[in-house]
Image (tube, rainbow, N blue to C red; front, side, top):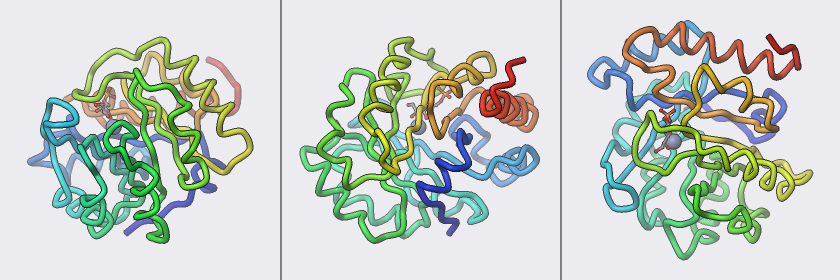
Length: 233
Ligand code: DX5
Ligand code: ZN
């Protein structure tokens, strides 16, 4: 398993985590070669259970099957994650993020994950105010702001997310917490999103578009790099 710390993600950021759901899952091994070619080291897996959100996707076996050279970034869009997180730790997750809306015991889920070596993340749906994570800040290492409603890849970035990212940044203040954003990030807006004070950017269908994943990933990394150095194209 490939581990990463919040500090490494923050110091090296903004970084790119690529969602594999729209890759050809029957050829996932080959498809991941595109990330190697482009130099992307974080693979994002969208786990949906058909209860918390409408679609059902994948679970621990796919996370386990992902090669250990990647940081396995597991985004749980599942109901009541408390008893389910252990299977993802066992599958070698490097980051485990669950939704604050998915349980009445988010603090307890974070306690369950403590000491596992995983980066503990809490995600917020577009309709949830950032204040929902305020009581959890001493127990988490990552806040994931969803820029789309969870369910599918390929949706449009909700503009109000910009304001929300600013509010999340203010809430995090000087704590060692990764600010991440997920949904609707494309080649056209990634440079702008990277300039919004985020540490980690999740992108899915803009890379795995069925055409040129390596080229797409490279283009997005370059755009993020431009935002990092402030050298706008
Ligand atoms: C939203 C998921 C996202 C999504 C990203 O349900 O959490 O990770 O798959 O896909 P794009 O980048 O296509 O919006
Ligand atoms: Zn996701």
